[in-house]
Image 1: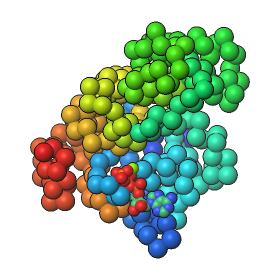
Image 2 (image 1 turned 90 degrees about the vertical axis):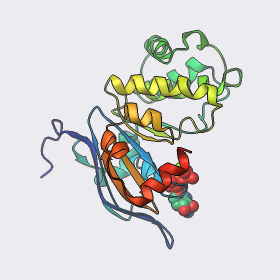
Image 3 (image 1 turned 90 degrees about the horizontal axis):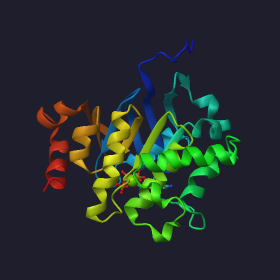
Length: 251
Ligand SMILES: Nc1ncnc2c1ncn2[C@@H]1O[C@H](COP(=O)(O)OP(=O)(O)OP(=O)(O)O)[C@@H](O)[C@H]1O
Ligand SMILES: [Mg+2]
């Protein structure tokens, strides 16, 4: 029934996803596809369910109904061993969430050593490459409180990449940053996307969305109101609710 899957065009497929917190329906019949090697940007007003969707993708939240397929496999039977799947998915949050008592490089080598059993030597060599990739090789031994927000977020990205994830999830990765640091983080994300890293990005940065996204999903009130290829989204007919939202954020 499940087929080989590996050659499937889609890395993630969400079908008819429903999720409630008590009486509050937070996701209503959500359908989203993430092709391998592509970035999908999710936008929408506060409370529309964007973060909840990411947490469901990461198996951090139980779902009420629907199917989430990851890398050709239905994730429902995997939920009991969710940590195995979660290590294939990197997650980057608004507030970085680095370990404050560890240096940049120690943040990056921790999971590969503990979870993957990598030797410290190999983990450090890979971490140095990742710090180069996020353009702060000189910050390896610096602690988070001596890094700017933009640098901390790039360490967080490197830390996620250290597990060689198949998918990266970003939840408003630049919204806690001062304006002058936003670009350095988006540039790294754009480079990763251009290298073929599959990702789902919740962001209000429409310039980034336009350059990096394969398609754009607009959510409102727990529903996917619009899901269109990026150029079509920005130039073509969009739903009145989408237009209203875009007018607000593009002000
Ligand atoms: N753990 C929870 N328990 C109860 N309600 C929750 C929980 N998490 C989220 N919600 C509610 O679910 C709805 C969707 O929240 P979610 O965080 O997914 O929205 P969002 O689109 O990410 O919003 P924002 O742009 O503000 O981050 C909101 O009404 C929120 O209050
Ligand atoms: Mg959110």
